Length: 627
Image (cartoon, rainbow, N blue to C red):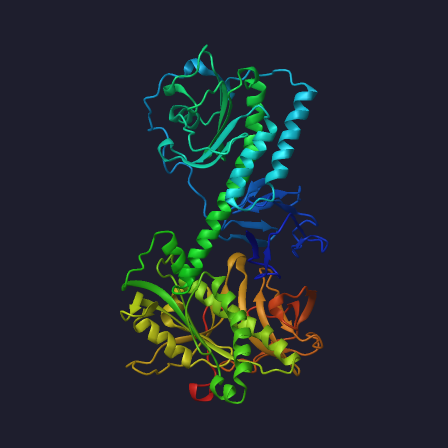
């Protein structure tokens, strides 16, 4: 299954699952609206056939781009980025495991069977080209293909698919006496999965010639065999150990990948298969191969899903994926890695929980985690553990692609913005609102399966982990505090406030930390988390677009153009950001809760220097920034 995730523009962060064809464009009538002035009204469309997702440009004036290359039509893969105007959309695929058709060879198998060349009438490749096809032949072929498609389209279980293929072939070819279907890409490893004999109960005596199977598999071509001798085939060249007069052997191939082989035969010389039968068998088998391929994929997905669910009971998601891929050993012990660690917790949770019933606390925390966890997972983060109200997550372990800091910081800002929407719903329903602090640090850790002989778990240890926890303990409501190491790794993409030196337990020297308020993304856009006031209303500036306009979350009764926006963050309070000019009210997203989302212009796009190249200094000291 594919998801489309908006990376830029007013809908940044929104994820759209692909359940069918989607028309993308500026028009609100599009099934995938792209609110971009440079996008056409019906810019492009996404074709979905249940397996593959294809992007097709609708003749747009500005073009459709795939990974920054203009395309007319292209098949999409996991991680591709589609651009329409200035809006970028990432393609995400779950359970994206594609088998390599060339991972093993079928050409080394040899069998010392008798020569069968005299019995091969033709292969499908040798059929005469340009032969006359009558309307009766076309009708027969179409009816057969429709019969197979109808019989197999709703079959989800592999055993039913295998048996259904042979049952359908027996209907299409009434002269067939026997049939078998085997799975595998090498003759030596073929496994019989389905066998049929018309009007016979036992199939135990059937044996198959490996020479014939090898010839069909090696050439990936179907063959028609007719007995050219007056007597029976001898045992070495027989198709099965019965009196076979005619047979068709067809490899099952999808996208050049061999799934197996099927064969039907007859002992009645007067009803031998013909070239037209072979052509029909190939057409029918192609439909059968697709059904088989889908059933095998379903089995594979179900197996991997079960394995992954079992591993997720003990391992974080990305770590479990690496184990399933065979890239990581889960034996007891640890290894040294470089990564980024995030801690978050709810401010005043202990005092709050003392005033609530336990059931209400559990419900509140589950609702809160439902909002926070996707922010981490969508940035490829791994959750190490939940500790009451706290979350510990990490990036870059076991494999660091050099972007662990960027992903962790983006997740943290997304968490704070998600909490804004969550609190708006809590407030509307008369429930308790929450505030959270986040601390992030990067460095060397030891990660692995650690514990006692009776109980073991995957976790992280080391000074970098402890430092991240200490930084988080200093964070106030709405804070994303990052260490100097993490800040420097952002390489100028971070914007915010330089905090006073922070003294923490078990550290001889004070730490240099920053309050992260903005993060540069693609196309010059910034993700922001900047609580502010507009008159008596609390609002939040959550994004600056590439044209330097801003996205603001605000209550429905708040007119952003009446009062100036004033910063409401504890380390940089009461800064006049100017009056907003409203450009448009946008469609809200689920994460926005009960708030509206407006696009506005402000006179100073740097927000009084907060979004400048260098961080602004904190106004109060730590003694004034109580949790």
